[in-house]
Length: 207
Image (cartoon, rainbow, N blue to C red):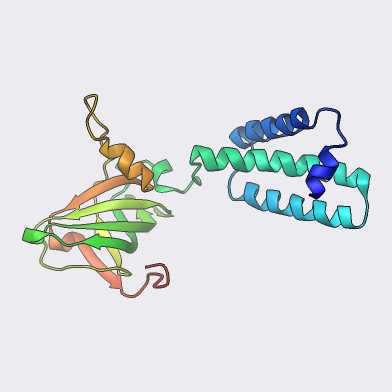
């Protein structure tokens, strides 16, 4: 209500809104990263409500412009799947030798062929340890031990990016995984390649 009343003061309100959002989208692509854009948007809109209440119209106009630009930045980030610099997709998976994380989901199959969704927290290279984030799909073959939700595990892996469909009309497995926010996978065939560091590390309210 406050924003609509203030925007209606302009001669072409929809042009004004579109202009501010476009500036925000351009800024989001080149300058500001999520989740900063989320906090900026919330802060500016709340500040707009406060300024309207105390009737500071001139300052309110400036804050309103900032709020709309921040909304444009947020819209870009939500649509573009922007990930932080330390996300697994940005690390260069070929250089990763070990990973550590918590199991989010699992599926047991026959012949000890199990599947796990792992939320990665650390990645190990030859001489480096990096804090990271993101999900991978972990396949195990012929392993006797099973793991479950909330297990924190360390795995010696060779990560691979999923392969997309090769022919028109085929199921796009790569896009399916991307929709699940999974950007890499690995297959484990030796028991000594995986170890459980701790149990009950998951969020059981979200399980």
